[in-house]
Every structure is written in structure tokens, then in C-alpha cells.
Length: 228
Image (tube, rainbow, N blue to C red):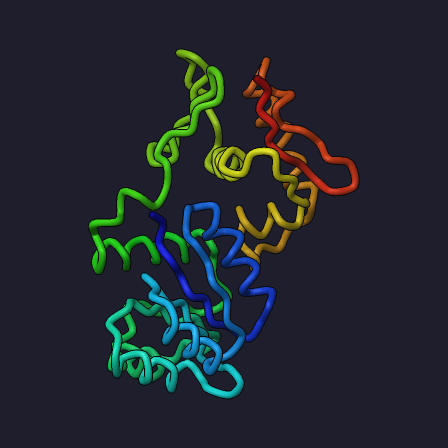
């Protein structure tokens, strides 16, 4: 059973990034665009974590957090562009478990979400992600950040590993270069599509006979397509 996470943010782009990146790590994401709709969802369903923006229409994040704490101890991560010390202190006084300032790295958000859940619901921690993913002779150790082909350990750079592990966790799904930049480098990364192409080229060289498993999807980007 995976963690159920309610993401509350009035910016669709932010919700999409969080859903895409956290989904890869095994989280089940439900979205809300404002505090009122989020509160209704919380009344109807149980969640393991709430990721909550501060500045929203209808009901802001502070007000929603107050309502949540009247009846629930569900962990809350505040996600906001406001980084002043006063705002953080207010959040913690309201029972917020962590506080992340925009722009943020999706990888950092996933790491912080896991840390919060490990503290509050440790019994589920081992169920978040599969530790090792294997296809044929190719083994990707997500926790150890190692990739092996048979008995040979591949010497990948950190970002090469991040790109490969992202694709391996989403087999047969095509991603645009922009999606890969957002998911691996973060939505605040200032670079261009050639960064992705360069890393894909290097990964293919490392994979040798398995290079064809990284497929170019013309007009879109790339996907990982393991062959039987």
C-alpha cells in the first residue's frame, strides 16, 4: 500500500510537477486547487500527507491548516513563495511538519516527504519504493545509487544515474525533454534541451548492448523500453 498524498496548490503547473515526480517514487497523489475543495476531500478520505500552498483563493493555507488541526494529525508540508522567518514560525505553531520555499527541487520535496512520513508513520516507510529494479542483466539500485550490467558496475555521474533511474521507474512511457529537465533537474533549472540529449548519449554508451532500450521518440523525447 502506497502513501496517499493530497497536494493543494492553485497553480496547475506546480501540481503537475509534484504529481509526476512523487508518482515515480510510489506516492498516490490527489490534487486540489483551493482550500475549500481540499477540506471537502479531507472530510471524505484519509491521507497520509498534505502538501499545502499558503497563497490560495477561497481559503488560504494558514486557514486550511487550522481547520485540519481541529480534527486531524495528518502530517502537513507547507509549500510557499514566502520565506520570511515569521511565516515559518507561524506555520510550525499551527502544527506544520515541514516548510519548503518556492522555487524548490522536486527531488528535495520527495526526500522531505519521506523524512516526514518516516517520523510520523514509520511502519509504511519500506513500502514507498522498490529498492532494486531489474531488467535482464540490468540492475538499478535506487537506494545505493548503483547500476550494474551483470557483474560490471557502471560508472555513471550523479545526473546520469538520476536520468536513468527516472526512466527505468517509468518503463514504456515517453517523456519530453522538458519533462525530464523538470523531473530530474527541477523546475527552477536554467538550461536547455541539449542537456538531456547529452546525458542520454552518455547513458547509452554506458549501457552497451542495452543501449537500444533507451528509445528516441521522435517529436517528443525519450522512453525506457526494455526488450524481452
